[in-house]
Image (tube, rainbow, N blue to C red; front, side, top):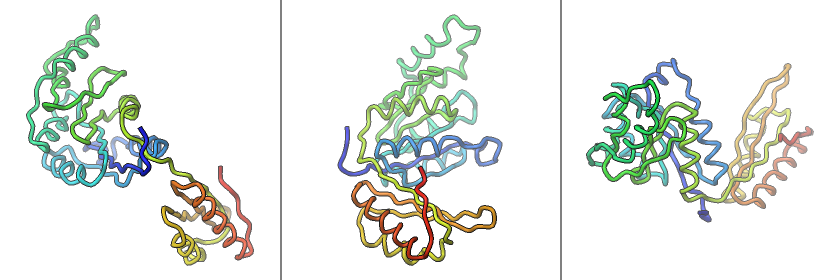
Length: 252
């Protein structure tokens, strides 16, 4: 399903371990890349605590502002995994033992030496009315309620869940991007780049400074969902660089 515009999305990473630095987040960047490849624009990302009120208030705020909300973390079997009941409260629904989720867990643990104890059974508790998100890695499903997609925090599992989600949601027009490097400081380029960006609609230009072997330079990234606009703007950036008496390199 493809839209003529780009749907917007937000990513919420839930976990005290990420905020403390004990666990390094590997999900935001990966999600951003997958969404961009499918024409969905990630407009916000947050990392929040394993705290019920924080989760509730964040979900209530963000789900109204974007087309899709993706969360990772807090749906496992331990005492601090409180994402499921918190999101249920955000939408004012109860949590119930989901028969299909339970079946998947029973099937997954059958024939193993791992007990499907009360803690693991907690992973079959899903907000009422939510749709399950497949977990081909470890069986315990995520869930979708309204425009919120709740996934595991473990990167391998989260990635597998998102792969399934992306097969069933609306895409937008993909972004065209051209990256240009030059040995000019971003402060010198700022005025000209700003003027180029103002000449076109649906255009974003980012400047990213670098310093290598005593040389100051800038990587300029031109982005648009319209290929012609992207190419025109990139040509103007090249001309700007040449006007400074410098050469440029296209970064692949």
